[in-house]
Amino acid sequence: MIDYRRRYVRFRAHTSDTLDEKELAKAIRKSVLMLYGEVTLADSRFYINEFDPATGIGIFHSTLKTLDKILASAALVYKVGKANVSIQPLKTSGTIKGSKK
Amino acid sequence: MSPIKGFFDFNIGLQRNGDIVSFIEMARQLGFDGFAVQGQIGEPIETREDGFVLLNRYDLPQNSKRGMKNKVKKYRNNAIIITAPLTNVNLANWAAEETTIDMLTLVPPYHEHRLRKTTAKLAASNDTMLEVPIAPLLTTDGMIRARILKAFRESVATAIGSGMAIILSSGATKPLGMRSPRAIQYIGQILGMEAAITKKCVCENTAQVINRNKQKIADGYIQEGIEIVKETDDK
Image 1 (cartoon, chains in turn yellow, orange):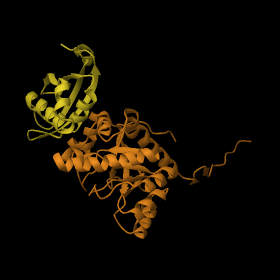
Image 2 (image 1 turned 90 degrees about the horizontal axis):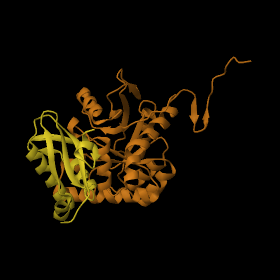
Image 3 (image 1 turned 60 degrees about the vertical axis):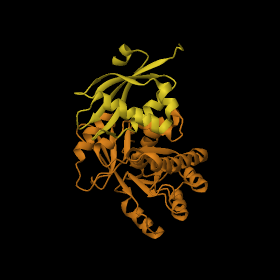
Image 4 (image 1 turned 45 degrees about the horizontal axis):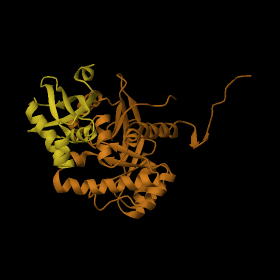
């Protein structure tokens, strides 16, 4: 298996409604797919590690190589379900622990 | 007069009598130190008690050259930012040369109104910047967004190639249409800018416009390098 450099991004999803983790991940994946295509989405290994719907704060994971593309796609996500959102990247780190500091 | 620093969103599309407080709350949460809005504040710059800065912006109408000249004269001392729409080549070239106009803004239909190389060179020599609103990229998708992206990327490439500075603004009409300074930087990368340039677009260029115009509208300012200095009683 090919080893890859991973990055964890702590983010905050600002919204007026409560967000579902799965719907949020789906919206970001869809945005990556539309902007950069299937190859980038496949290479990104994107998934949301944790997400607190009450605060909107969560951590997602991606490869270092595709990180900028994932963050750009996440910034362009405007709707998740029926709710409007604004995703704000807070901190990027190589470990989950580091991203929480 | 201390120089202003920080992150500013230069284009909040607040409707008349809109809820400015919700925009301020959102902007603070996202990490902005202030934003510019048209026709909502009386002063060119208003600093609130909590330190948040509101800037008065005036968008020139898509009008005749004479009409635009009159509006510039009327609003220069009331607005810290004056922008002209990037429409036909004559108006765009005039606005690019006019030192009282701070930015040329991309306006719809985006595929018809692109920045030309000649306009960009004129603007670069007069410190007039290109404003790219990101709102159309958030609210569209598919082919429509692809066409907007094409027009934006071409205008951005022309501006960079001619040495014209760029400002990325949200153009948000709702608080959740705003994006954090870091998110805007990543959107800048979609438009074909390098990371270092996007950082300048969000932070340095905005502060440069504010500080330059603060100086211009101050008492005693005549033109760049010439201002009336008060006499002191030192003997």
